[in-house]
Image 1 (cartoon, rainbow, N blue to C red):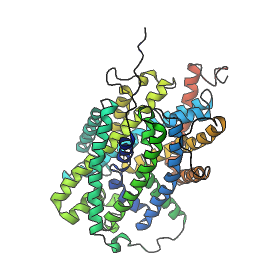
Image 2: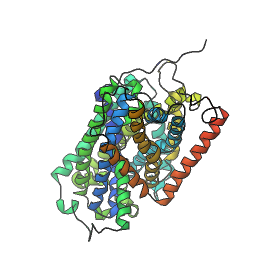
Image 3: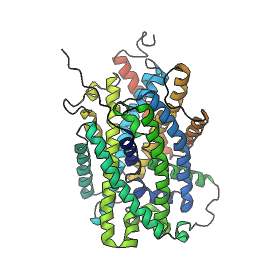
Length: 463
C-alpha cells in the first residue's frame, strides 16, 4: 500500500506571520541598496524611485491579500495562476511558467542576501570582494552561510515560527541602532544636498527613475512571503491579509527612517557612483556607525547586519521551498519535489535544491542579480496574478473571500501599470533575458505536455 504523506500543519499565527514578512523585507536589503539607489539618479532625488516602488507595492499588497485569503495554500501565486486561468487549460501553462521563472528569480533573491553578508564582512576582514564580485574567501563564506541556512530550516514548521520571531527581534535591534543614531545626528544639509538641476526631465531621468524604482521594489520584496505558506497558517482568511498589509506599512516607515538617517550622516557624494567607491558603498551602514560611535561599535554593528541578513534569507528560503512542493503535489512539476520529510513534515527535497541554487547564484554581481530577479517576475507573477484575480471574480463569484480589494479595480490598474513601467525601463539586455527565458519556458512546457499527454495535447483535458 502506498504511503500517504502527512499534511502540513497550520501553526503560524499573526505575529510570526508578520515577523516572517518583515524579516524577509528588511533583511540586509536597505543596508546594501542605499548606494545603488543614490547612484540611480545621482543624488537624494533618487528617493523618488523608492516612492514609486511604494506606490506600486501598496495596491499590489491588496491583490496578494485577497488571493491569499481566498485560496490559501502552499505555492501562493502558483495556485492562483492555475485556478484563475483554468486548472485544466491555460492555467497549466501559466503555473508552469511561474515555476520556470521562479527557479531563476527565487535563488537570485536569496543570493542577494548572501552577497550582502560577504560585503559587510569585508568591513571586518578585507578581501571578501573584488571588482564587484567575490574572492575565494568571500565565496567560502557564502557557501558556509548557505549551508547554515539550509540547516536552520531543517525542522518542523512549529519551531520555525519561533525561530522567525527570534530572527525578527535581531533585525529590529539592528534597525533601531540606525533609526536612533540617524535621528540624533541628522544633518539636513547632507540628506538634501541636491546636485544641479536634479529634476530636469529627460530620457536619462526616466531610465534612472526606473533603476531607482527597481532597487526600491527589491527592498520591498517579501511583504507577501506568508502567502507561500498558506497551508501552514492558522485562520488564513484573517491572518494573511493582516500580516501582508501590516508588514508593508510598518517597513515603509522604517525604510524612510533608514534612508534619511544614513544619508543625513554620510554624504551621498562620498559613495556615488557606488561601483567607484566600494570602500564605503559595500558596507555603508557600518561606515555610518563608525562615524557616530567609532570602529569598535561599527564592528559589533556589522555582525548585527549579518544576523539581519541571515533572518532575511531564512525567511525567503522557508517560503520559497514550498512553491515547487505545491507544483509537484498538483502533478505539474517533478514528483520528487512533492516529498515531505518522513518525520519532520517539511518539503526537504525542495529546500535542498533551492538552497543549492541560491549558493550558486551568489557568484553574480549584486546589480545584475537585482535587475534580473525583478524583470523575471513582473510579467508572469505580478501582472499575471492581477489578471488571475479579475478572472477569478468572474468565473468563481461564489468563492469565499474573507478579504476583498478595497476600491476594486483601481488598485489593480495602478499596480499593473506600475509593474509594466518598471519592466519597460529595465536595461534592454535584461528585458531580452526575461523574454527569452519566458519563450524557453513555453517551449519547455509544450515538450513536457506532449510527453505526458497534458493540455493542449490531450483532447479531453479541457473538458
